[in-house]
Image (cartoon, rainbow, N blue to C red):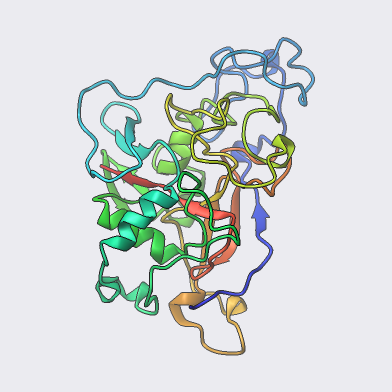
Length: 307
């Protein structure tokens, strides 16, 4: 079985609009098009002047779209429709689980049907943790092409760039900070209202990062406080990193053994953080950069989107 060399995830934060720290409610009046508001919608703790104080109010998650337009795709996990009028889309409520991915493997999808950037990917088998992982735990040990293939089989796609309610392609380098078109970030931040999916201030008891003290990936949707930026969406921060359709670019520094590498060594991105990661920096804006397309690692999974 092919194994990409394990590597330490290199983390890069995008501080939209130059806002790098939490501020008191009185110091921020609304938000602009490039900044996620820490205090919009009553999300600050009573002592909001202390950035490290956990949020003391209920989640600021938005309700999902109630237009009655069904989400396409039938296999699990279920999805909810999110986004503003005229630009809605669907996103899975949880990461794809082991039992979901097993159904995909049982379907024996032909790996030769993948696009050129995945022609090297001859098997969708994942590299599971030593204990195998419980059926309800996230499907990890999947590379970018495995995740893409699952989403296509499910009648969905890897979350990317949306315009007018339709996916128009991958998130571009310029679009990484655009919460209006970046599907994953739009969903996590509730259209730039939230720094974390649950609110404006970091709360270590909410999501499965190191402070949560789980020590491993949890079954999907079981960290009860880690919900949002829309109601019903779980674990957009923590549990496992998530592949998305972002700006994968050729990067010779990621080649191994002196070889050409080709598309397998393209540099891609991850969102969300995992149970191995620690601190308030892991919010909706953070990403892991310089990640090989063929990386299969025990704290990396995915979820899908659809029109």
